Length: 244
Image 1: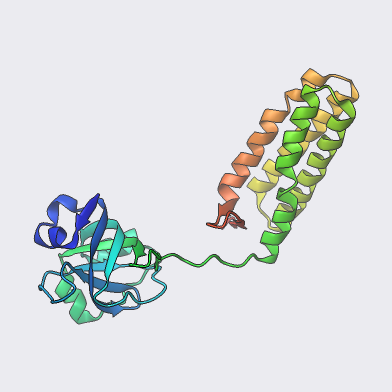
Image 2: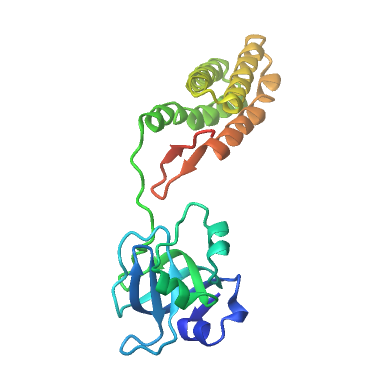
C-alpha cells in the first residue's frame, strides 16, 4: 500500500497491520537499526514516523528521501518482540517513551535515492557444506532431464547412464545427510536413490514404460528436501539450512 509519511503521521489507524510502501525524508538516525522519517526534508514538522529496520546495513542519509517497505503497527515493545523474535530494540529510553503508541514501520527494505536497498543483507559466503552440496546437487537437474529424454526416445543405453548418475548422486546426498544426523533429509535421499534403482531394474528388463514411472516420484523427493533444507540467495546460489 503506497503511502506518504505525512499521511501515516496524521492518521495512522487505516494503515495499522498493513504492509506499506512509505516515502519520506530521513529526519534523524536514532540507532544502528532505526531512524525517523518526516515529509519535509527542509524543516522538521514534529510529525515523524519511526522506522525499525533490523537488517539495516548502513545509516540512512539525513534529509534524503527514502522508500520504506514493511508492516506498520503501533509502537509497543512486547508486540515488536513477538513479531521480530531475533531483534532487540536499540532505541534510547527517551525515544522509546517518545514513540510509544505511535506508528512504526517494521522495515524489510529501505531504498535510498540511488535505488539501493540499504536494509538488504549481504549474501553469505558459501561454507564447506554449501560447496559439497552444490557439487552433488548440480548433477541432478541435467540427469533428470536427460533420463526423461532418453526414455522417451527409447535410448536404453543413455537412460541407464543417466539413471546411474542419479543413483550415485542420491547416494552421495545420503552420505552428506547421514553425517549431519538429519533423518528426514536422509529418508528423502534414500527414496530418491530407490527410485533411481527401480529405474535401472526396469531398464534391465527392457521395460521402458515401467522405468518412466520412477521419474515423477524421484523429482518429488528432490522438491521436498530442497524446499526445506535449501535456501535460495539473491544471486541464484543456494545455502544449506540445517535441521535444528
